[in-house]
Image (cartoon, rainbow, N blue to C red; front, side):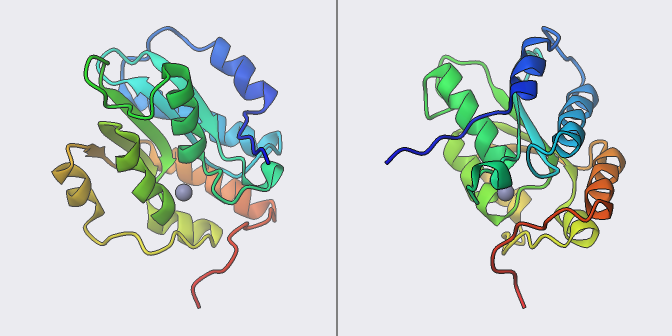
Length: 192
Ligand SMILES: [Zn+2]
């Protein structure tokens, strides 16, 4: 048995064309949101994207997208796809390993329950979020799952910086476009 998580060709191409450094957090988020927008346009996955950047310099390591439907993998959310790619590029399961620069995960929307749990396991040191989980649920109908009510403080206790509400209006626009397109909401079992 063999299972693969891959990125569509346009994402690979655009990763190769990224600027060397993206200094401001707002610009990093704008770029990630642009990937989420194109992921709908090119029908290569759901309306979400994520990027791993060197926190202090803004050097992009990789930007990835949601791949659930094209791969038939329910866990292929943007965060999981992107963290996996970053770990492959760096050759480590721990993105917070000693001797490496601090890495930051920039996500177009707040992590769902699954991704919320995956982030501390990845070792990443900083998370930047666009749309909130409530906005995702109200705009699209996805069920984000039982995220811990004090998720931010649980992250901070584990040394993970949390920055919310960056370019959330732009992230919400992508979610609205997705919902208006009548695209499939690929949640399996949702809460009653
Ligand atoms: Zn998720």
